[in-house]
Image (cartoon, rainbow, N blue to C red; front, top):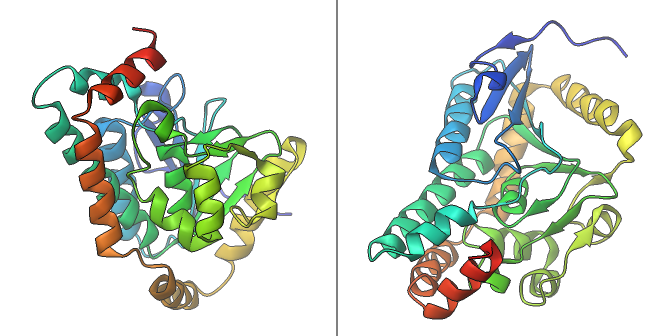
Length: 268
């Protein structure tokens, strides 16, 4: 297995405080989420991801995007402290709806990216973190990682495409189990139900992820783009479904019960 060429940094290294770092290895881009402690998603994190995707859109030589984490978890989802702060003010529900629209915009851009996207889920992927992975073309998971959409526990719903993409990918039965019953599935179960394509032991995870990216990057970039566009016709989100998620978040954010559940989760 030949080594990757030396990386070219497209953005500042995330060691300098950026929530997402990006390295370019020839046709393979590696985006590394690094917002302490659990890659919680807020507007700044979403804008950073959007910047990564714009860069890749404007770089035709990139045919594969790997999305990974520098933290113990892949991504814990939307920043609930941000949600809690918005619940405490009259303009909060409208601000949250704007953020959910931003989620949709960024995740839709990821799903439509010309490059093949791979989510490398070594740690837990919950809520908006799993929705991020669902917007990718391919998903690799470690057996110990837990995946789920537990928003109902805090009085919310998976508003970043989760209700739609999970149902399209695994069927409404699996989606109902994970969203309505709040089940978390580990890596092996996620592979069994078709939520991910590969479950790989942690000792071999990095090598396998790199091997998958290298294999795909050796294919015709134009053929990959055409094939991805065809698959995208089948898996395109319904505008009505996306609108229902956004309006649903707006209604739930105005309920006292939601305020209480989020406050209890945060220990307030």
